[in-house]
Image 1: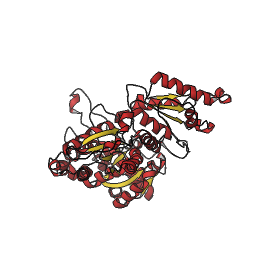
Image 2 (image 1 turned 45 degrees about the vertical axis):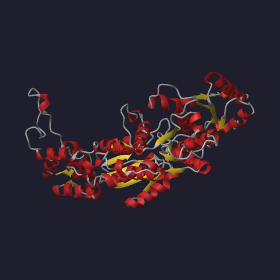
Image 3 (image 1 turned 30 degrees about the horizontal axis):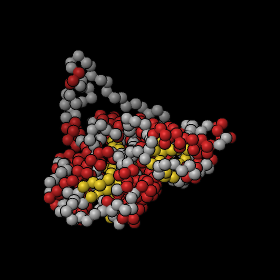
Length: 512
């Protein structure tokens, strides 16, 4: 276990909390010391939920360790049932409580509780959050699904699908469900159950009545989908519909399994991305260097969109959840880059610095890293912060999701037309360094021109007059970066004075 200021995934019991919090009538009893209740903040603050997570903590203290902590756990279980009256209960231990080996599963088994109890064995020191969510969902499905309820004959009714994987604290899960449900409706396919998000014990019981499953988020839904395949023979669709191409593939795959015709829907032209690809700005943005990092599913999907639909050059690709490293390695090979499989944010920061991208697609951590480097960034994957739970409808899946990707990925970049105009009119009376911004009026004085200082020590390069004049011609919003890159290039080459040629050589070097 590595101590870090940032972490991409929490311990597995946090994954279990994400599943329980997303469901209805399911309560999670967590054997934990005082202080482990911090996880409540993840949901009430970041996701801005209107109620506390359905989690009860035993919260034993140091003085309790000399007593019977197992009795404390059993008392908490009894009080939980009397107070909340859940339909089913999850029981487990936090990473700290795991060390005292109280065996929560064995303790509740002896109590003869009147509701289904699902014990969770989540090894905190070997596994992490995504695995914990997947294992929890799998155990819920295995325990609560009714083996006698299976799909009826398709004749005379529309096909039914289960949507598997969305959880509480999931990146755009709420809106992705709406978008995928809409896609299915256009195909004439109904939704049997969405789980775990929004599902209760009665919903889990009828999972077997669907004709097939759609694994929206493999990190959470894969294990449950495999179980449903074995138990009910349900086929699983694992194509994640992020981007126009993937959404078209998804629609065709669903149509084949459901026995419907996808072409009328695909002819509607539901995304604006194709229009953008033929625009002036698209021509300028073609070839922009993009670095991608996140969970395996979103990283691979983003790389496909960036390369095939945006015309960007993928210069970095990686994920933090090693369970999906194989998919990321295969994608990295396709785009000719070295895969980065790590949960160390410092390694990611170093890789971004070396790749010199113009756009970063990542998590909340990459947003901070990109900000330090002055690079545009868009968040594509958890872990995320409060700004990635917008009040507006903002999916990443489906055709509307492709429109959202266009907005969120292109806007951090300097739009081509805007930059061309600024360059074209840089000598105009309103656009030169000595001009007063027009919105301030004539009563304001012009800002002082940005000085180019002498080197602070003998190891820094000085600037010649010609190089200084050329530097001032660069638009102000990228001038600082150009100067920094040129000085770094000069230091690497051992150049004492930066001449005009040095500036051009540095530009060519970083362009490569």
